[in-house]
Length: 384
Image (cartoon, rainbow, N blue to C red; front, side):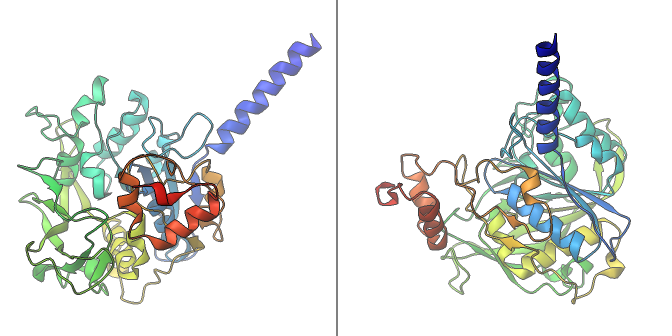
């Protein structure tokens, strides 16, 4: 009897430990223009390191602007951050969100979890989408299959991405690759008509490492920024003159919820967002300003807003299925002094064969040095 009771108690403690390890990452804001407002981030993409971008941006908005920021991640069964996972615990926190920052790709979640996202849009909450959020759901079954990026029914054409942000992954009618990933960076500037837009306040031309997308913004959008593709991965003046400037972000003042109801709500979408993009202060300023505008705080936007990174930040490279950090729990990122990601966290997929990894690493010398430090037995010279 005592042994049975001990097993029950042990199991209970294990469950509680696992639950705590998967608890959401929360940064409690203090004084600032965002005091009293709650921003919820959903970071769950397979490629562009949203699990790094979102906590770094959340820390800036909480520490410098006073928002309460909650970051939700795709989580595995052991409570570790798992980019693109099929489970995002604690989505019920969206019930109290004043703004949703969405950075996902090809998700497939349980009906119960998707319901919290659907409920948020049904109440018309403001929303920001980064990069792959235009194609955020794929192979989603059950009652939420209309959220899939390739849903073609007239009742919710283009799924969540098109109906919320105004675009979906569709080379002919929506969005597709334009600048070459890992080889061609881009210079981003305000479109002429947006130079006085509050979101562009204090935002000088900035560099992003994300390969440019070619987007066809919806006719009801207000264009914000455009991108000039470069012949270099790093910032330069070496323009790829074979590729004209194309749109890279816009705002909307409404979206359509799954119920078919038009919701008057502020929306910002941008095709940047890879974690390396945040190395440029003007990229961070653009994203912070976007959050303030979407939250209805545009009168508080000034060129002097603090957008400095908080704590350590060593972004990894964007890559599908590799180079995310292993065995990291949300709690490992807590606190102002934490590093995104922990310096000791090893990299996934660095022992993979083939040319893909070589293409990713060729222009990332600091990352190669970091990998060699954490994986001393790995011979990167053979990754060709």
